[in-house]
Amino acid sequence: MAAYLVLMPIFEADFHPHSFGFRPKRNAHQALDTIVQTLRSGRTEVLDADLSKYFDTIPHRQLLRAVARRVSDGSVLRLLKQWLRAPVVEEDKNGTRRVLPNKQGTPQGGVISPLLANLYLNPLDWQVNERCTGRPVLVRYADDFVILSWPRQGKELRERLHRWLTARGLSLNESKTRIVNFREEAFHFLGFQLSWRRGRSGRNYPHVEPGAKSQQHLREVIREELNHWTHWRGVKPTVERVNQILRGWSGYYHYRNSSRVFGKTKWWVATRMKRWLWRKLRLRPRTVGSVSGRATHEFYGLWPLPVKAGWTPSRTA
View 1 (cartoon, rainbow, N blue to C red):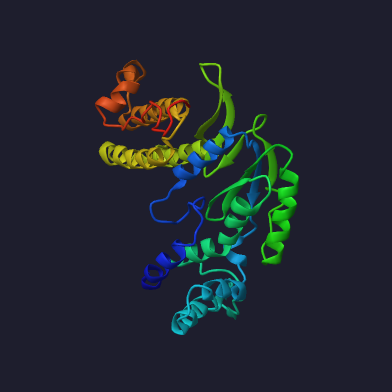
View 2: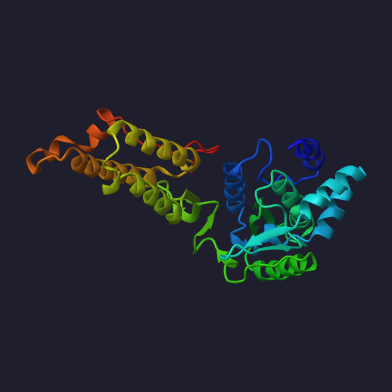
């Protein structure tokens, strides 16, 4: 962390404005805002790129060269080199340990890894956003990024991206990388689904809502908390735990056009909680109606998901 606090301001001055991951005062919502603004400009052909094991395949030599362009202190460079090349210890089922050399990748879970990962892809941000013909827009959050361009530019951009990555020891996940015509097909980014919709005014707009996988993940987590094997818990701690999950999920996904999804999810969670209370309290069939969806919020304290649209810089969407 001490090294990160020293190095972060140095590299932060060089990072492109369209890089949003693991940077101070930047977040995923800002990345989505930039994508929406770019789609509205007419750049509706989307290169939805997926890097293959990016954090595990960054070449150490090239990465250290990138660091050395801005850092001349030999002790700092040696320290970074030691972290990067620390050997990997593997243990099999029999307890036998093997020490393997580490020739690529950043330390898994290391505080400084996101900074180094941003540094290695920073030239790509500048190359695409500032130097490409046709002025495509690359929006990146760590190793997740999309390139938005005018129609019929995506194929050439994909070929150029492939060459750029190959020259730097990286590769695309070909099975997950695709070119999307946004006016005909939706795509996902950072857990959100973006699709071309027609608003009540009759005008089309980029619609942003929580993706299906994000909704399914929340339901799986709630099912773990509200199931028959948790009936031994008290009602109050169970509701508090569910509320904690809902607030965390809402804090990230309650953004832009999330009203419809949040309304459906609110009803589903209340219904799940109601069934759990029926079985927990062993209510008779005639008294089941006494635990209504409204009672789960007002009497038992279940936190209601907000159903009004999340804040957005331009409320036209």
